[in-house]
Amino acid sequence: MDHSSHGSMDSDSGDSMMGASCEISMLWNWNTVNSCFISKSWHVTSKGMFAGSCIGVVLLGICLELLRRSVKEYDRFLLRQHKAQFLATSAGSTAADTSKATGEGASDSGAAACVAIPAFRPNVFQQAIRALLHMVQFAVAYFLMLLAMYYNGYIIICIFIGTYIGSFIFQWEHLSEREIPVLLMKLLSAADEVASSTKV
Image (cartoon, rainbow, N blue to C red; front, side, top):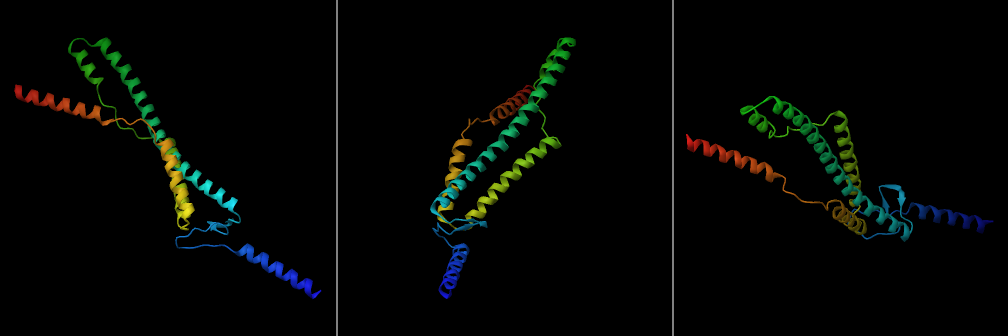
């Protein structure tokens, strides 16, 4: 009985040591098995589990870039919607003016059609969606930062790989110099002012 009890005590102590063994280092390390991240429940007990953790970190990095693109696309959607509404209302008013105006009035209405689109301020619901997207993006970025603070080389490399893949996919878009039309309008107006001043 003594041998059996001694054996059971050894097995219990061995199990408790196996369950409590959690390698956490504040220095650069390459730990795999028995690594712990964020909480005790994230205890890597096998190489397969560590590989799954690495894949999850890569996916988190991709999701971060997806959220960044989502923020940009939602802002562009709001601006397109605002521009379409403004052009629709201005086109209606311009058509009404041109039907009534003649001569100089027609030229004034044509000039009114070239009025710049006013600045856009989202409403409460739109701003709530923008704030929600920003909050989720901040949460994912903060979570990745917490993972990087474990100084595990494999995890940090996976963070770099995930952000690279995400940026490659979601930041691949058409690049256009949107400031060129605005600059051209300013240059034309400046040229008109110079021409009018020289005539005087």
